[in-house]
Length: 270
Image (cartoon, rainbow, N blue to C red):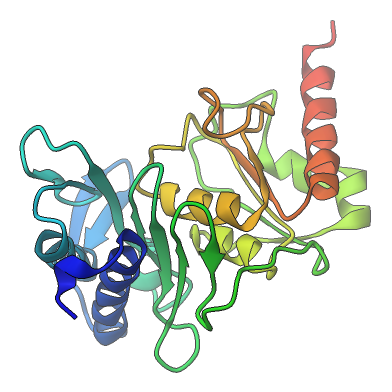
């Protein structure tokens, strides 16, 4: 099939898979690090994976623009559509040999894909067309809170403090009684919420709906039927939400929001 005849969802999946192949192929090698300031850095794998993703997007959608984490905005000037690309989410994990990473490709308001380069034998790709979401086996994603596992992002900065600190959530008695924390330090965890491998994902931050890091995972969760809001309870996509609480179901979301709200009330009390 000619690549320009692919649907947006197929383009997203193909691009994410191309990036994942690069990430998988370079794993374990000694890679150059490019300092980005404030303790952040990219590696050769980040750059090469982004080139691979962009190669697919340019071939399939030459009239669209691309916003990449490493290369910034590229493509057609005045383009009506712009793809968001995070070629290697979990760079620090990857740089020390940890395989918990993701490749994220999203078209805001439409298709998206999250690739796990090391899932299964040849990686896994989770895909949405903006309305429906599928797993690597082509079956619809089915979120569930059955695992009781909640992935919490503990990476700085912490703009919600003191009203919200992720570490405080982990110490909340109700959290300890009902959930078990996980910290994978990559937005691959959002795909796992959509797929039923996590009960929820929580992170601090600003409005993450247009972030190259989060857009693909948010799209998957929403299309799969998860409840996705900011830590302030504002539904993602309906206003400038702060941070993110993506839960497999309404009950799990309500429990987490109650804990977050209790902490905020405690801090604000005279």
